[in-house]
Image 1 (cartoon, rainbow, N blue to C red):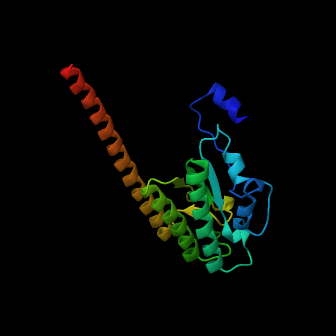
Image 2: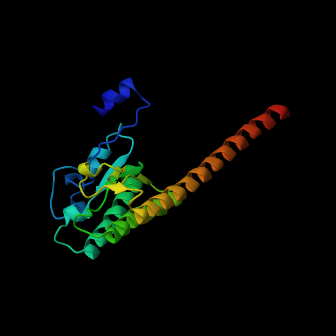
Image 3: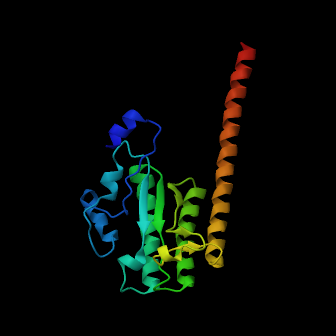
Length: 203
């Protein structure tokens, strides 16, 4: 299906949209999964040539429900790092942490903020170094008056000031990186174009 979509729209970015669980293609990495197997394969699925970037989900409160917050945080830190490393060194593709969160039905907001900070720190550290991590999308953004649709993971910016501050800080930091890379790219283009003009004059 990925090949077919690329055949009719070569500029269409494609991703698989799985949680990031490891499978049989890298059986030694199955130890990095939570305490269950689901039959998907992060490496094999994302090695399909027409897949442009990898995706990972992170729900340690659902995956390790009997573990305390410290154990869930330790799992999350390792989960993030192995997927960033594998995306960079094995897949050689960007990775988007497409869903993450912690339910306020079972944990205080301080624990959710700590999870957000852990995810964002891993993404920023990778992006700043030119690594594979490309961004993160928490689950899920609500506005006022949507509480009837909530599942415990919703973030209402006007009602969750500490979480909103973490999100805003990450957005600003990644935007600074984006501007820096854009400036470097423009300088390289200018230098290349300037060199061509000088060569033309010299000839």
